[in-house]
Image (cartoon, rainbow over all chains, first blue to last red; front, top):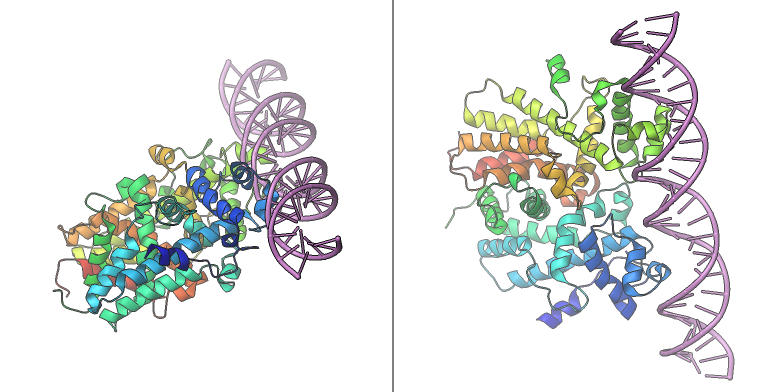
Length: 225
Length: 225
DNA sequence: TAAATGCGATAGTGATACTATCGCCCCTCT
DNA sequence: AGAGGGGCGATAGTATCACTATCGCATTTA
């Protein structure tokens, strides 16, 4: 299964100038890009610092990504593609729609707890980036053209898969798509609050899986078991 | 009532070097800061452009805010303070807890539709800033010290007020604080998706007030009327 | 062997977030 | 009326950084 994960996660969209997955330097850019952005935060992260960490020149990095922001988009898209794959695996072969949905919500809201099987991707660092930086991928004035070019495709696909799980339980829910997007985006926000603004979280809400399972199930037109 | 609004909204915390509310230049910095950030987005916005728009020098702006990021924090905090005041007004004198909660959710999720009564604050522009930029106020490595200095105090107070309304209906809800924060933060995210990434929203979810009323009420342990 | 590809190195440009400093003007206090 | 101070505008300067242009070397490919 780990091999399958490794083979299948990829950034389909043209967010790069040259596909970093195809060369050793490209993979090292991704690997150390993750570590540096996690360590410094996206604002303090610079291409120059990344080049230094790699022992190369800035120009070499610019061969793969046209700018710093596109590197972030690449990492974030990779992350959502990984979550999509994880969701597909973790809901496979489950026939009961309700059970599928519960597993799906738990999958989508679960933090990454291990470095994972990808040699050049530290999943825990990437998870922290997703929590703290992923909104910056779209919160800017280029969001519309970025959307047109498919920069957020993995996030959209993930959201639609969760929507399908919701509709599998309640075909008449009035807001399945918005609810799915809220769960995925909201779990990141609450993770951040939990870590940095705990007064926004109260007590007993540390397990967001249960929070969102509770939230979604209770809005559905269906009896509880 | 408008006068009261005008008198009462203020940034209590020490996010500024010199209180911009106390001088004419300070108010013009706030006024044109809102307009420019709304127009350019926070990344493309610069202190130099703001100074040009004001017909003054950069150094004059730096007398009020130590850096560009603090100006954003000021505007965002002002915004949440306004929303808090609005929430207090719009739930005043309502005795039925359920009705209070519904009004509170509608208040907190309602977009700003008019420029409003504050001469140096265009509420519609500020609302757009809150949707597109407010997360950047805390999504950075200074969030912990910023929290300690109370930079997010208005947001926290607003969230706690909504939490109190939730608990007024269901005293035993397991996650009242997290749910309140999710509603407030989530309505911004969904507004942004609605505008820029509509495939994340589906159809029929344009009125977020109803979406969140539906969502919150159905999680509460209480009978619907 | 020739060509292409990938990489590293140097140099440079324009923007921009600040900082330091100075002198003017107006208001207030005496 | 004169002195002092606060607020303001203006100039100058620094360090960082995103990005571009160009070249030459080495390794792989044809």
